[in-house]
Image (cartoon, rainbow, N blue to C red; front, side):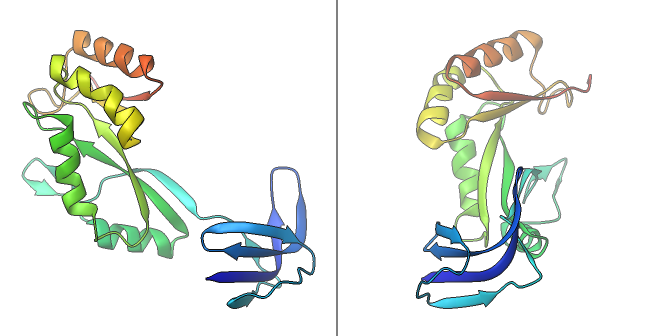
Length: 187
């Protein structure tokens, strides 16, 4: 499938101009004035801005917490995001204490796979950092593509890990080039 967007106003960090955009599949193949290409679909964007979809890096979809679930699941949450121009969301997987990161990923994939109508990715919330969890970090960063990890200083007995575990997690994630998010509320 190819799409030609004609006469759209394109604004970048350095430029502001009107041009055509030719898209083949999911790839922008050409940007220029008066492109002479044949497309399956042509959209007249005269007088309109053409911009990429937004990315929401902090969502909670179908998330169990304190006996209930967040209000949106993957279908309703990604649909609402698309209506607002957000094409990608990044959800937080919550590892259950005593379980592996891999089992948490499988649980979240069972909710997201075949239910999302937009693009999505994950952060991994680590709630039980131990010798086994430590071994999983490299795999998640290098094989699963999950490069950001969250830890909690709140919700003692549910999500919180102690200072030693947090430091060890930070060091392990750093070693493999990942990022850490900290929910920094004393709890």
